[in-house]
View 1: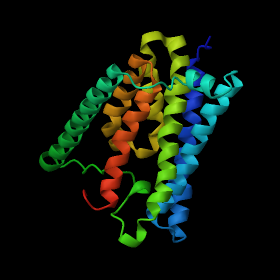
View 2: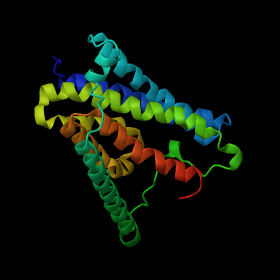
View 3: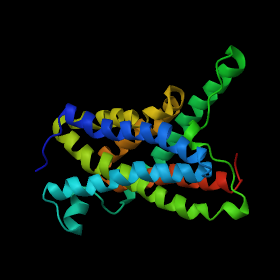
View 4: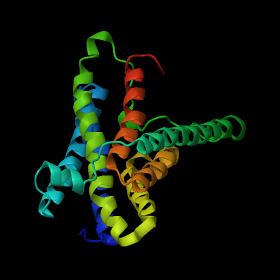
Length: 238
């Protein structure tokens, strides 16, 4: 039986990585770029330093709770094969997230044009990625390592380990507390970009709780993060 997760404990589990993310984003990555490291490589290194500990924490905490061996870990972290219903949920959630993000960014653009509000940036300053030259595309290998830890680190800890314990304490509202913690993790993005993240921040935890399958979160997170990045660095989209 899972131990309910108290709200202070939940705040700690999200807050500590959030604080570390801020340190990496505004202290470590600028030092790397200042030392001549390519900005994309600096983000890949810094991102791995943020996300790999999440992956390790999810496995370590589950192990300490007595879930040992692959089968037990998969069951504890709710990593299950995708059912037909799960796949439909992924499609629906992707459409809702895409539409919601489009509305927010479109609204921000209209406000910028007609009300003179500041233009909304598409990425935080520590994550500015330009198309790679052919000689730079080897860095995609380093990105793939960061991407692995980004998706699995976040989803295994936030949705695999924390969310079930939040469900034990908060019931049907657990996804909302999970979303609030996930938003806290993105504090270093700044308020404007955090606003654009609202659709995925809200929809993804809800979809995972609704299906009871962390694999849904892994698939959604990967689909919404990976392809767009690859298209940007290959110069297909700006």
